[in-house]
Image 1 (spheres, rainbow, N blue to C red):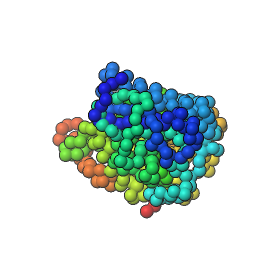
Image 2 (cartoon, rainbow, N blue to C red):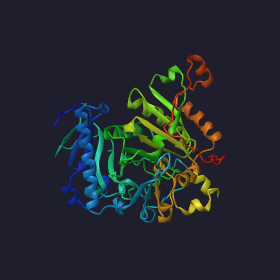
Image 3 (cartoon, rainbow, N blue to C red):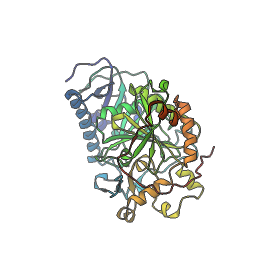
Image 4 (cartoon, rainbow, N blue to C red):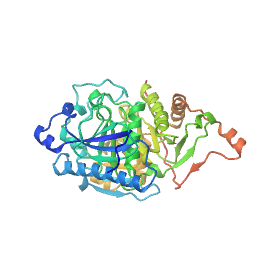
Length: 426
């Protein structure tokens, strides 16, 4: 057991005995008896102590998730779903999940507005049973990670952040991070919530533990602020895709955040990396997201590499569907390309699509998600302005130091044609 820290984040697991006594009540009673897991604010540096504390977190999260599976709280057994890596340069991952689209909760709101007010009459996470909650996730001060059993109740001056199971899971360990759950926040990113998501990714300590976010209009199905997370022990295709580093001004570089553009990938997107602190990275990315949602541009976010790398994808698939611009062949797959599909984990609903899955078919679907090159560059310029980023002219950069912007190109991919002219309605 590590010493009591002075600045920490706390995971509070609802007592199994209390759950058994209360039954499936909603989350209004979540502040009652706790077990605590506390972890440091500063990301792990790779020491043996750091590795031990990270393993503890993983063990607790997966143990609690498996407990809920044993109790039959999931709508289907995701561990029985067939999964394979599709041959090709990027290695798209295909999963056959025939139960998800039949049993997943349907969307209850408009898909043409990224920002919509919270509606307490519709499903939200305050209505889930306490048995679905794994633990609470709170900032309480400290520099070390530790676990306390039967800890006293800790008073907080605001609504709790909680980790709960996703009852319609995509993968093993699929959970939801719900910031300030009882404040009933709508699905919109802010700097505080995004920093919380980065903290969870950092504490996870594994490149195979990732967080994702879907805005409304980009296939979020619940208008209550949440992130998703799960383990998948293979690289995502987008993590292997080539990137082109965007040269930034010296003033912009002071926070340590670098920005790149995906190249040779079916969905156009930006990659944010580094930062002197997690807060630096959270501030830049959340400001970009705020511009997108304030201007009705649907988007998806993938948090990768233990919170050190963030992919941002403005998208327009739902709009194309509404305008009748998506082929019937793609519509028949019933695949809604959200953050996991865009990142290369293709959740397929028909056996024929799974058996015939190829890199070409994955690329064809995802290409319909992407903004056109012209629209993407327009949106990128607005994002840079909102995030306080100043881009250098690449020709000037090459002339000044003799080197152009660096690019990471691990694989050679011939992209399929991407449909042009996708606009986001005001």
